[in-house]
Image 1 (cartoon, rainbow, N blue to C red):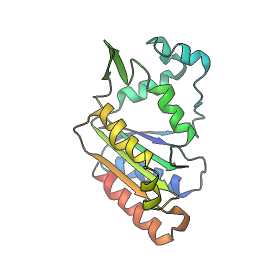
Image 2: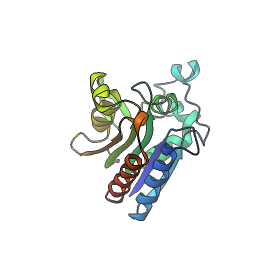
Image 3: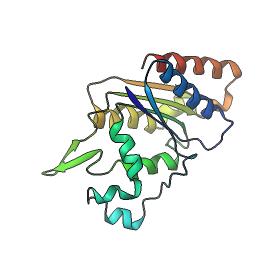
Length: 193
């Protein structure tokens, strides 16, 4: 299966980068064709400009500024997000990826006022997230990233398929042991993706 792995952590020598590398390695070990998309390393521009917004519904012209990213998404049969959670949301670069790449004609189409998915070719969805907050604080805040993955993205891809959701909470108080355990969990989950 061709798996698109989206990564959005700016620090090269970080735990987030270690999770990304482990995800890529484990997916490849399992025999998947992996497309690693490190948004910071690729200098992805997350800003939806005024011009882009005005052309937003004009498919296929709307895809020109992000054509290579659209092609990668269209080829994907699996999607894995590897990202930190900042202020109970995704980093701006990942949010910008969704705004600029998941366009009308690419991820959905409006037919008589109703949204129809164009991402049914993606058969598997997973997320590997790190939170500074504890599970309780994330719950109390409504845990928007978890809802986006398990509800919004899942509905766009295939609402009937399960989602692999892995989260290391309380990174502010993590230890080498908690990080190692979570890395091992990611390894096992991605080898079984």
